[in-house]
Length: 165
Image 1 (cartoon, rainbow, N blue to C red):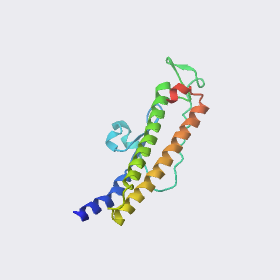
Image 2: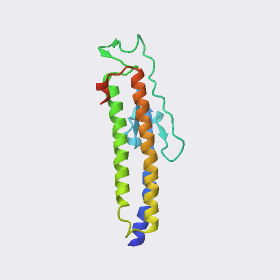
Image 3: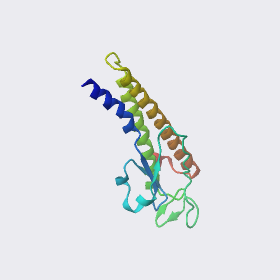
């Protein structure tokens, strides 16, 4: 029984290294999913795998595509665009980015909570949890950087504060 538990705990970091898929929709919005099945069918061929494993942090350019006509903040088909994106697109991007940060923070709390009582824990189990914590901290840092880049992009596009909630 103890060997089975150790084996499961050793495999735990492998499940934390899940692949993330990235694609850009017709509105120029960058989307992410952890499962290729969650990527809309028309974007699956263009979806790229984004690595989250200890590599160098990726710089994601959040500069929006140039609008077809006019300038930022102008009316187009009844909607005001900011940096080529409408209100719903900005709200969705901020909501997704904040959710990812909160999810990583929650995962980190759970892992650290598992280390509160190490008296009955084997060394390999302890090291496995430590490895998972390092991976989660890197992922959290990456997601916070992504949120900061989104905020900078929104500042450049003069996006109102209420769209960033």
